[in-house]
Length: 300
Image 1 (cartoon, rainbow, N blue to C red):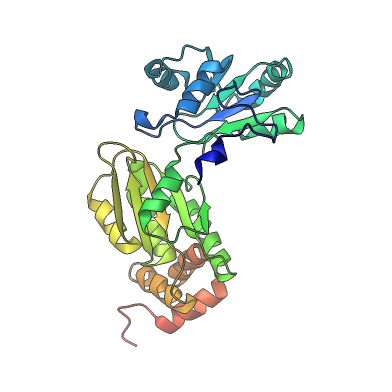
Image 2: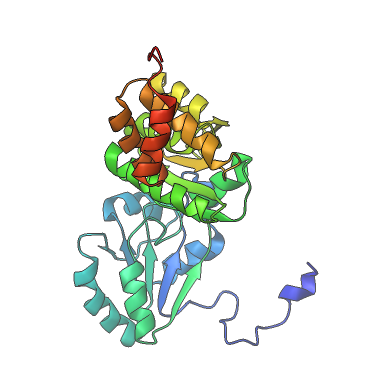
């Protein structure tokens, strides 16, 4: 882009470069590497009258490292509703308030949406300083189709709920959804989640990205089946993002593969129930196919 694109003063009401940002400012912070804090993010935090943090103790280390001594207050999942009214009052009075999460882009799998929605509803100014985002970085490194993609936050913590959620996605795929799917996951649940993904989505192309921007950054690519097997015997550490590519095989092949795995350890009835929940297909259809396939050790 030509240099002159940045030379003229803005004509769209945006502040001059370097001018303090007014209202509520959503400031993206590093996801692991302090070098990724932008000069504009640093300045927005320094100019704020108040910084709202997901965890003030965690954010204190970042603010100290970048030389920002602005007062902080917590805004997290459990107090956000109670904090909205006083924060809106400060914004009406002309105060500059910055919102940060523990890492990355605020609101993306982090608190703040309810506050932003309330500020927008009142016509108060809301702006943002863009920056690091683990989900998007993992997507660009995964080798999977970059668009469209669907970010889904964290999967449910329990296996039954996870498989039901994955089954809903499979039903959406049969209705036409074709996108790279992205989740965050905790290290201690990664192996079980990948097992449930392999059961629901089959041996689809996938990637596990962890510790992005840090010293031990790693992106492991392969099929869901391979990744599930690897992490079943290898403990994962750090911040983790899981990506699953769009479907490539037809539904009948996916159904047969899921039933084959389920029938190896379950009765026909139980296997049909599991696969129906995992794939989003009607139970009658799955049960009929399971009856046709039979148990692997059946003599018929």
